[in-house]
Length: 303
Image (cartoon, rainbow, N blue to C red; front, side, top):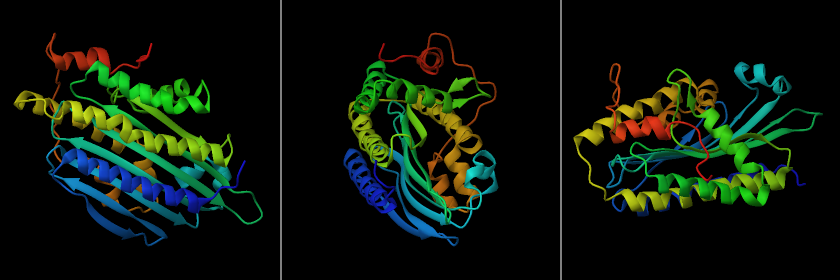
């Protein structure tokens, strides 16, 4: 089964951050990531890498964090009372990419490991993570390929894994106040420990490594697509949904802020430009309407 090994997980996460940043720089072809090391007063720290004003990416943030604490925040122990009185370690890589071209989707990925310990008791640990895609002007073949990559990485771990974590993603990245999904989904998992450490860690690695394999081909296909002011304005409007979700519902954002994490790193997921419009309704029969009518509803993309 294997014993939980935080050092092994940390080494993987740092390498993953490197690999993803290198591939994003290659895709952009112009900009480079700014590296920013930081320390957390309560314990731990991390390194944030942010690319801005690139040829392809308006902003891309790839953050590694490893924070420690003597006790969990009250909001966490309310849901997980077994964590009360335990010290904790939380580490992960989290990224959000906001392209300039509205025909390239925004995307998010995260893989993380959590362990809480108390003298005289077994450690409590789990893995979590996933990736999801938020297109503005979707192409069905891109969505199908994205989900096929997600399904393929899940197959070695069991036939039920993709349907379970695909549904969890659809449910998690849902905005109840808008009655729509944030995008076309992907995978989301949390509290994973039932497989034992080795298999759970292997799954988290597969998710982390498959993200860029799923996203890079979409960027390559769409980055030269011509667009105008209409498409750009719609992209900025739809980015508002990203802000709404991250600030109201996202567990990672809330955990980071409640545990005294570095605010700049936590909020690097925010798009550099965004707009809201009162009572916006897409015109019938337009590509903008198709996004709402077809793509913002959970469905079996591989059926």
